[in-house]
Structure formats: structure tokens, C-alpha cells
Image (cartoon, rainbow over all chains, first blue to last red; front, side, top):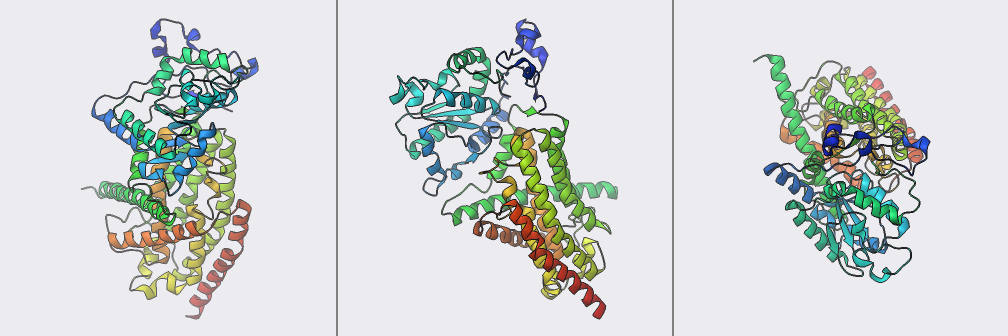
Amino acid sequence: MSEAKILGTDDEQLDVSGKTRSTMRLPNLDLPEEDRELYCDARPKAVAPYRGVLEKFANWARANSLWILGFGTGCGAIELRPLMTSRFDMYRYGIQPRPTPRQSGVFIIGGYASVKTLKRIVRSYEQMQNPKFVLALGSCTINGGMYWDSYNTINRIDHYIPVDVYIAGCMPRPEALIAGFGKLKELIRAGKAEGANQYAENFDWYKANQKRIIRDWNMPDYNW
Amino acid sequence: MNPVLLQIIYAILSLFVILNWGLILGGITARITARVQGRIGIPVWQGYIDIIKNYFQRTSVTHGIMFYLGPIFRVAGGVGTYLFIPAIFGSVLFANFHFAGDLLLVMYFIFFGQLGMALGAGESGHPYSAIGVSRGLSQMTAFEVPFALSVIALAAQYHTLSITDIVAAQQGGIAHWTMVTNPLAVVAGIISFLGMTMHNPFSVVIAPQEIPIGPPTEYHSSFLALLQTNRAIFNVAKLVLFMNLFFGGATTIWGMLIKTFLLYMITVIVGVSFPRFRVDQSIRFFLRWPTAIALASVVFAIVRTQLF
């Protein structure tokens, strides 16, 4: 597999903080040494939004074309299926499922996230392109809900990836999910849904939290 | 004004019209499919919003030079196909760059994009891309056979490989259309057209439920926007080609819009009515009845030209 390269990253900008380039690179220490050169070791970078009308226009388009990642991460994923049916019909709001993280812009965390799933959540989230939005569905994503003292689930999803909108309930109905999408659209239009940039800016904090939970970290430090 | 420059301006204008028609046609189709399923469906202009959003994505990841070139080849294939088909008979604006043997070049361009895309998708390294490409290319080889045979039948019937001449020969009412004068070639051509549009039952190449989305699995952001733009152009280009070959072409823009819309509805109706073929089933299908019908149409055309 060829080495992935990031477009629009320029190394001079990485050096602004005064650190040398090598320390700004991701170590990928958890990968076997022979595999390290196969993976990208650049850090994610926050991308400044455009200014004025152009960004408003872009945000309007983003709000009206929400492609959700077709990845059910917990029991809440059962609420995603009815959205596609004629009873709820999410398509009329510009919401469409997309089978690959590369092409999708919205990640719905469907309820509790077990440690095993968290690894996949991080992987999928990092493969999505900026701007990307996260909807956290159900009480379990807020404080663990009924799993708050479980040995195998995490309690707060926003310690691991940035969340834009929470939808409380156990389980929230599809109507609540659509209302959550409405809220997300408001945030996007107002330019307040900058989760991807937040993730890049606080990358070390998120990564430390993730690695504290995920013991078998056999992937690069950032999944390009 | 310099005639070459004028022709280039006209080509860009007609390409713009075709792009918009392709996007709106996609929206109308999604809307109709939604109605069949008892839903309201996406807005008709959703295609524009999706493309704008994808062009405005802030980051993108590449896997190498071929990964870049894949969508560019695809767009070159779509635009190239359209630019050599005269869209409206007798119109200077929509004449594009037609010449004596344009039908052969158009047939080549239809497949050029897929080959380029195969290289680009291959470099992305994603296993599902490779599966999608192998399915796409094998299905393409299969529907190519009846399509090429029906084109040969037309060439034998009209003694030309120029699309403009084929359209000219069909002027003067429905009785002169290939649909009436050589129905077998039309049946074979339309069946291979179903395969070309990759709607059901031949949608296994980009089957989202099986192989995430086939060849473009790794394509995102502006790469994907380019592919979506091409899809709109390429769809209408193929519709215009089949309209010209089989249904008498069009002399006005309204004629073109109505005929391409009705032609597209054939694929939509078949698409919502039938489930999906596996790739081996679709190859067997194309190589049996459509090929036999297309062979019969060639014989029919040759016999007719010998007798009359």
C-alpha cells in the first residue's frame, strides 16, 4: 500500500511553534518497526475557515448535505434504520447514508461505546475529512447511562472525540434524532460546528485519553 | 470571430446545459424512486448541494499520482464522449466537434473513463475498490458485445459511422427511426444501455450494501465532487448518443430534453422493478439473449440492404 500523503499540509507551518520537524511528527511507536514507514506520520492540522460570504455559502451547503457514516456503534444504531424508511424519510432533509468514512461527514455514536468499539470509532472518525460532525445518541454517550460502572464501556464519548450535538434519552426515538439533525444544521450554519479543528488543536489530549483506554493500540497514531 | 474559438465557446455552453440537465435528471429520478417507495425523497437540486459541499471540504488525502489522475480520466471520458456527439440535429450551438467517424471515437470514450478510473482506484489500495473494478470491467466487456454488434448493424444499415449522418437518415417522422426500421438492434442496444447506466439489475459494480461503494471507495472531497460532476455529464452524453442512434435524434432542445428523459425512465423503471444480478449472472445474461438479438439485427440489416 502506498504511503498516504496529506494535501495542503505544509511543513513550515508545522514549525511555527519553534519545535523541530522531527518532534512534530507522530512517533507511531505502537506499530512494528518495519511497518512504520508504510504509514503517514504527519499530525492533523486545523484548517481555518474562509471568511465572510464564502464560508456562509459553504456552511449552507454543508448543512443541507449531511452524509452519515453507515456504522452502527451500539444499540442506538437500531434507531438509524427507521430514518431511511418512508415513515421518517431523512432524505428530504438532505441526510443520506454513505458506506465509507472517507465520503461521510456525520458520525452518529449510537449509544454506549465499548472499549473494542471505541478503537473502531477513533479509526473511522480520523478517516473522515474536515469538516466532520458527531452526533452522540442516547444517555450512554453523555455519562455512561445504565452502563456507567461497566468494566467494558466508556462513560463520556467527548473525552475521545469532539461531539457537536447530544441527543439524550434511552433510547431516543427517530424523531429525536431528526430534531438532533435540525440542531446540528443550526450549528453548522452558525459556523459553530468545528469539531474537526478542535480535534486537531487538542490532538495530544484526545490521543492520551484514547490510549489510556485502548490497550492494544496496533494502529498508527493518526489514521489518515 | 474566429470559427474555432466560436466552436469552443459553443461546446462549453452546450456542456454547461448538459451538466445542469444531468444533475436535475438525477434529482428527478431520485424523487420518482422515492415516490415508488412511498417517500418524499431528496430535493431535486440535492445533486448541486452535494457537489458544492464536496468541493468545499477542507482536507483531502491522496495515495499517489494515479489516484489524482483517476477522476481526471473519468471526467475526460465523460466530457470527451459528449463533445463528439452532436446533441441537437441542425443546431450550431449543440453540434459539438462531430466528424465522419465520430461513432467509433465515442464508443472508445465511453470505456476510456472506466479504464482510467480502474487505475486510479487501484492505487488507492482499498480491497473493495479492486473488487469493484474487476466487477465493473468484466460487466463492461460483456455489455460491450451486444452494443458493438448493434452499432455494426446500424453502420451496415446506414452505410456510415457518422452520428450526424445516422440522425439525418432518420429524419421525417417516426417511421424512419431506427426503432422502427431495425427494432432488433434497438432492443439489443437498450439492454446494453441498461448495463452501461449501472442501475439495477446491473448495479453490482457500485453496490453500497456489499462492497461499500466499489471503485470510488477511497475517493472523497473534491475528487468525489469531480466524479459526481462527471456522472451528470456522462449520463446525459450516453442518453443523447442512444437518442441519436435509435430514436431519430432531436431537432430542438425541448425534443432533446423530452426524449432523453423518457429514455432515462426506461432504466429507472427497470431499476425499481428488478433486483440485482450477481456479476457472473449479468455476464451470462449479456452474452446470451442480447448478443443473439444483436447478431440477428446485423443479419437483418445486411439482408435488407442486399434485397432493397
